[in-house]
Length: 95
Image: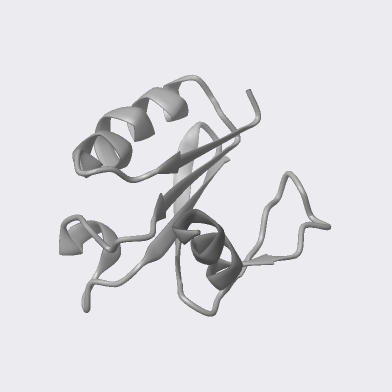
């Protein structure tokens, strides 16, 4: 498994904590947490609460996180030629 993309549900704690730890332990190189509703603790998505995508990159066995908001470009280390914005991904989920 090289890439996991999770869409946050009402049980967002699983995506930001339990699954995060599981995928990190499994050495999944890239983990995307797509929070299109902006639901979770401000610890994970900051304030003001809004849709976010958290990209987790595995470095030396630990995830390094990049928080993206609406209008940002998604950069994947696994797929460097990927051209996708947060807006495009959010629009796809909402339709």
